[in-house]
Length: 260
Image (cartoon, rainbow, N blue to C red; front, side):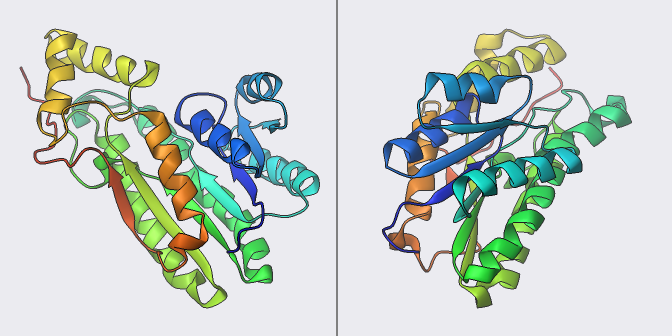
């Protein structure tokens, strides 16, 4: 990759981590096209001049195809795909997880990355350059009690990342995964609330558990994920591929949900 402005696609970037990443690349002078569901992408584009957007559910193959058709036409190509889409999935012991909830979690967190990557790869191969960044999680590095569907999907993301790095290396295309820890924001607040309810304890206790096992005892900021994306897409990272990099303040003991 060179110092030229990049053509960037980011999934589920209407809010949260995805929007922080989109803003960071936009402010750095890159061309950015995002997607999201339910009007979030359009709202983000209205709020941030220069940001391009398509409404799309990236768990749906036809919607992904439509997003790529729109984005590639407007960007004039592609240098970087960031697979950010994900949902929390069910919070329950595995024997109580409904198969529909299991499939939905894997569809959004893992299948979406397959669907988007398979569209991006021919473009990146043809120009023999570019990068894919997949959002995994510290749940992809450790087990996650009461969140087995999410953990399974995020482990799958790392397997996908490492496999694609092997496949695409000969074309000078790099693939890496970022594994955020607990990221501050509404989504994390919802995760904590649901786990507290499932365990029958106070939300404050759950929140404290999430940070107590880290060397740096605080939640991650979305901007810190965006900063790593900028680095991994830059020439400074031109020999970094196939890596799963945690942004979590160094997890010493991962948060494990107990029965009580």
